[in-house]
Structures are given as C-alpha cells and as structure tokens.
Image (cartoon, rainbow, N blue to C red; front, side, top):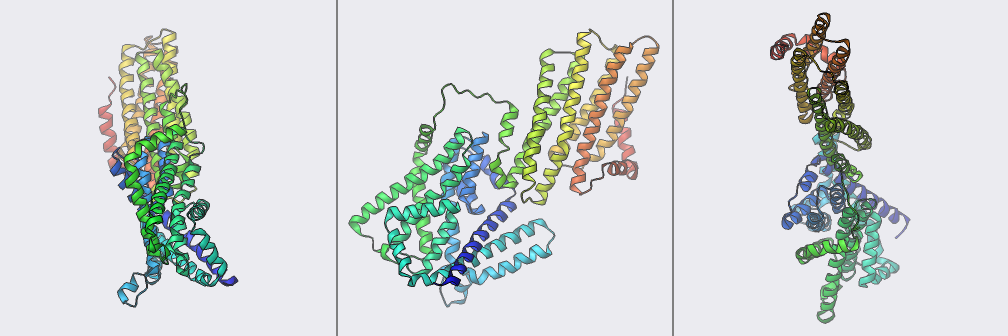
Length: 590
C-alpha cells in the first residue's frame, strides 16, 4: 500500500463520514421535528417504546441522535426515566439498518438486475436527481430530498473509495498481524469501543469495518468482538450530553451504557463459553459486509429481547449509581418547567427545537393574557394577592423574553426549513409585544391599587362605560393571541377594524369624562386614573395589532407594517368598513 492508496483511503473515509452526516441532517430536516414529537408523546408501553425507538432511529440514521434526544426529554421533564429504556433499546436495533444498506456494496453478480442493487450502480442516478432538485426546484421539500439523495450518494461513493483503497492492505503482513491481535475478544472489543467513541457513531464505525472486510483479511472471529465494542463506544455521545443535566437525564445516559455493557458481557460470556466446547467453524471464515450486518443485527435484537424484561432492574441500577439527596426538594414554577424545554441538546435537531420554542411561546402568550385579564378584574374588585400575582407574572414574562430570545438566536444559526424559519421569525417578532402587554397589565394593576389605597371609585356610569371598553380589548386580545397560536392569517382582517373601534371608544370615553367633570360628577384625580387605564388598554390593542399583522408579514415575506395596515384599511375599504360597523354595533357605550 503506497502513499496514494493511503490518501484515497483517508479521502474515502472523509466522504463516507460527510455523506452520513448530510444524509442524517436531510432526513431530520424533512421530518421537521415530527418524529421527535412522537417520541415525546410516547406511552409507557415498553414494546411500543422499542418499536418507536427502532423506527425513529432507522429514519434519522443515528442511534446517538435518538439517545441524546431522550436525555434532553428527561432533562426537560417531559418524559420519565422508565419511558426512555425501551426507546434506547429500540435505537440500538434501528441503527443496524445502516449496516444493511452498506452491505449492498458487497454484492457481486453478473446478473443485470442484481447488479442494479449495488449502490455503485444506482447512487450516481440518485446523485443526478438530487443535484437537479437542488439546482432547479424552488420547493423546499424537494431541495431537502435532494440533500438526502446527494448525502446517500456521497456516503456510498466514500464507502466504495475506502473499500478499494484498503484492498492492498491484504498483502501487508503488519496489517494482518494487527487484525490477528484483534481476534482476542478483549482487544477487539476495546478497539471497536475506542474507534466508535472517537467518531461518535456506531453506524460509521460498522461501515469502516465493512470496508475493511473487502481486504479479505477480516474473519468473523476478528469482527465479532469489534462489533461488541462498537456498541459500547456509541454510548459516549449520550454520556457527554448528560454532563450538566439533571440527575434523571444522567441516569438515562447511564441506562444506555448499562444496556450495552450488560448485553455485550452476557453475549460474549455465553458465546465464547459455548465456543470453548463447540468450536464454531464460521469464526475462521472471511467476513463480508452482509455478514457484519447480520452479526450487528442479531446482537442488538437478542440483547433487547433478553434485557427488556429487566428494564426495571436497569432503572434501579441507574438510581443506585446516581442517588437522590434526601434533603433535595425541588419546587419549580411554570416558567422553570418551560425553560427546561429550551434544552441545548435539541439544537442538533432544529425542527424539534422550533416546536419546543413554539410551545414555550404559546405558554408565554397564555401567561400574558392571564396577567392582563387579572389586572382588569382589579379595577372593580381589588385583591392584594391577585395584584402580587400580576407583578410576579410580569417578572416571569420578562424571563420568557430573555430565555426564548437567547435560545432562538442560537437556533436561527442552524439549518432550518422554510416553515420553521417562518415560525421562528413570528415568535421573535411577537416576544416584545407580549412583554409590553404584561407591562401594561402592571400599569392597570397600579391604577387599581391607587384607587384602593385612596378609597376612590368610578361613578356607576363610568363603570358601565369602562366595562364595554374592557370587553372590546379582551376580545381583541383573544383574537390576536388565537391568530398567533394557530399561525392563521385569515382573521387578521378583523383585527384592524376592532382596533379602530377601540381607538374610537377611547376618544368617546375621554369626552364623556370631560362632560361629567364639567357637571361636577367626577374629580380631576379620577380623571387621571381613568386616562391611565384607557391609555394602557389602547396600547394593548396596538400590540395585538402588531402580533396579528406580523403573522401575515412573515408568511408573505413582507415587512412593511404601516403599509400593510394602510392596505387593509383603504384598499380593502368595503370589507374594512363592514367589519368596523359590525364591531361598532357590538360595543356600544351605555
């Protein structure tokens, strides 16, 4: 083997790893976070958990990604440790699909149809289709599919290049000597474990082993312990992701490690004990890619069948390793639970991370609405606990803005689908509006507090008028927040007419107050308080308008808010006038 063969091998390995990464990213992007949401909603049925873990891993082509995702679920509190065990076992089965795909490279036949199954025959066609999708298609889904096809083609080209480059190693005595050393079960297992821990992918390390099989120097006796070690080495990714996580998240990573350690130990003890008496002849046979895939699959399926009934034992073992502190009592607020959903581990699966941001933003919107509506109640019936509740909610909503904003800035640097990019833009645009509405809720609360402390009250007529105005603002908040949560721009045309009615009611309320003031039925001090309240309401309606209009702006890639509002009011004047009249009839001051 000369220098050029070595360079070809390194280049082939680089293309192989890059193709696998590109393929995984493309598959994850096409799934758009849906697969991860299915995992999140998993029931406690262990059989379903195994099947789901295997299915998801087979699709996204990475058991490490699935396991890290599970660690994130446990850390954020959306999944119990007991639910993760089946998924982790299933992920080990799902990852074997890659070795079966790669085994196709070892097909040798003169039959035309069988030769078509060989990746070197059909991957160039996939590459051409993929490039065509990327260059000529404007639809994002087709471009993502193009990325998957190109990733697969690069993966198979790298595998073929690597396999061709290592073939001369069969004539190198030193290489044969190293492989002979690896036939020692412990050394072979250690080699497989170290290789997989370095590249953090059992699929990739199995692919490398399948490429080495092309030399004809790798026997099943050598390959078997290496495969065992590869299953242990893949645990490093989950263990690293557990650093700095909650105790349960660390336990989830340990379950993955214990499952592979115990499964490997049991398999090797039983297999080599029986071999001492039976002397399996196939161990001396030359391994091939298909044989590697068979061994890889049999081990993971058998380990799952053997250990699944003892899943509670694995859970207890994880608890014994990482114990709870007796004095440790954790009381979490709603906000803290939401912030755990913004787990940095989810950034590696951007589609799912966007879904979590959407959920947290929706909760923020609900708390903002709760804060405002509670503050509105205080005007007619003041309560100190409710007033403090409004203040506490405002503090939490400030944190929501900070935590979500910081997380989404990191997320925006990832490769996102067009839909996810739009969702992220909508949330980022609306965060400040939610925060400002909660500020106005505090202002309303302070006005109610001032009235309570000074023992002031509005006249019966003013209370009735303010109730109509309050209802109009409440309905606008409900409408705008519903548009945000559903990302539905069909009702946007209703927001601006209602916002105009809110402005009209504000002006009318001020005029009526001036008349009462002139007749001596109201005081200047109460006038200041009323002005503060209705001004806060009017600004709330402005922010609701911003939220509703933002949905359409982002969907249509238009970012001229004033121009868009002007277009609704004038270019669609008949529809606007009709809606305006209907709202004006609905909200009539007594």
